[in-house]
Length: 209
Image (cartoon, rainbow, N blue to C red; front, side, top):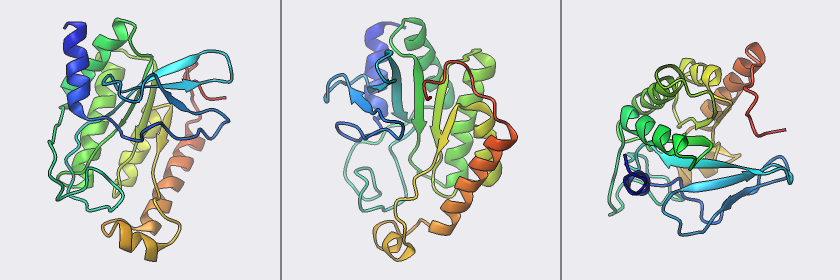
């Protein structure tokens, strides 16, 4: 697969869009090489000791949810793209072998239901770990409505698993993201924490302190 084809497929798949990036929890942040870079690579700095190049991508930008803040919410007239777990694993491993990226950040829209979206994300991670023998950095952002056992599976396979609460108040959440539930999100975060405590393994190339 050529470098140009890798870049084309990465661009078409849809970036996890946050403009200039967001501040990091550990005193550093995401930095785009260029705000219009179609390669969807973000740099995770580590306090002056270099940076980890993360390929950030959505498995699909199609979604049935109607979250007001999301540019990919249901009902918007925009191109929708999707990559299968096999396709994305092959694209990422090609880019990794060519020295283009060091790690992967992946999340997904929810075109059918949360279990379906999470099953595809888990399949991707399992393909990378077991079929491609990839031992590098993986960050998976779970989708709203994920099952506890799905969260636990990701926690066993990824250096980092995250989940967006979106709001600290259910009343606000009902207005901006009517399909989401705050209590369910808090429960999922607790499952991530308990899974980490039960399996504290971290791969040596985790860029966090």
